[in-house]
Length: 638
Image (cartoon, rainbow, N blue to C red; front, side, top):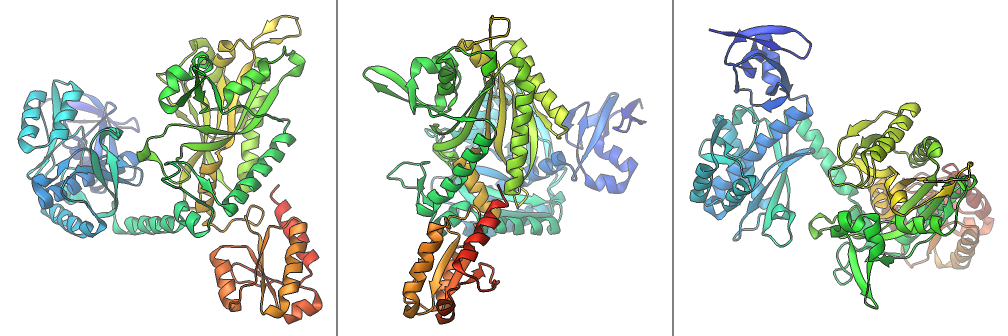
């Protein structure tokens, strides 16, 4: 039998008979490796472990310890779940797609006559366990698209038929396990018995292909791990995430609400939520002024012609809202950059005037599909801590590094770790190759000089320039995209922005688009979940509540409340005719940092007794001393 040479990632080469599989290669190296191997990369192509290798190749074994291996494992779990649902509900249900996603997988089902609920999960999970116990081989096959269309039409799977027709391929691949057949590229585990630990977690609605005009599907979310210990740890994290859900805490702490009367994706801020916003926005203003930014303000709508000049109309209009005034078209701004360029252009600039740093807490509106709206983290109307720096090309490096330093400072204040990635030119973009290269190299050079680690995210830049995206890590080790730094040579060209250089000639400035927190709404949602509503004292919308024991302390309670408020402490009083324990517990439930208890002793001595929300008591102190304490604690952060 002919022999072929297999090169492994460590550079070593081994000879095997032609037709060897990746699983056989793994077994030849060691049984432990074979047990962990779920797929392989053959000359860079991800394939099943049963696929025969018939010529010399580079082979990388993909194990469960890798992200790719876990994705194969979970994708197989999605097929097992789909099989279980079909076994239980038959032709009443049509299957659509079931990909692996971060931390799990889902499968979308079309079912007119049954609404899936968590009560169905037990039945589905029981059937999945039976399928796993049967250890059904998972077999890949290929057939012509015409044959596959005929097969799925016969099965009544209309969505699979549509997928195949849209692919326009001559052949497609199918995977079969027992009587269940699914259209899929793969790869998959060799058999259903390789699955060990899984759990169905939730159900939600989703439009077919994300199109609000198409069929409403039912999406069952689930997760799967190689062992029960990992699954248990993950489910505990999910439970903690549910407790911290900002939508739940937003209601309980009376921070914000949404109303169908107002419209989906539009936040209504209640007094405490508005105060939280105000504290964060005031902090932002101070930090920007300290760093040499000028505060500006642009209009909410600008003429459509301006959005055409910028390229937004051509490349971004599906995300915009438009209106008409006096037979003139206007676009409601989804970004703040256009007004900032008009400010720059309002007079001739000299090289001595540069850089110009314009900062705006700008409210923008974007047309997000209803299916992706999610509390504060995905809304249609939001405020960005937006700034645009217009500078000479030779100043660009220093300005990018200045923004990176700004991000580090602010994330440190809020206690967030973060990661960065450089996103390069997308397929849909404007500007010359030369300008994109200059912009990308500027960002890349600044990252390398600072020594901060980063990844490359190919093809995910803005349509006008590459960007550095900063993803912060919260208390549950989840990553959120917030800050961004975008380098743009294109829009200054389109708007004919100039400055007079030292040589007396006109030159073109460069523009840096950047946000530090990003969307204020999104950032507050992240903060709520990160701190579980237990905000640090300096940003707490209510820093203290003054609580009387009996009515005899009413006058002193009001006096203390007024004294604290006049000193700048965000304070409330609770003088209801309720028991002290009840009022303390309610303040703790509202996650107010300090409760100032006032009884006869405190009234006689002119003091208060602060109690922290975790139950710890401080020594009695005067109201003046408590004000100083709050100020000292707050100034630690800025």
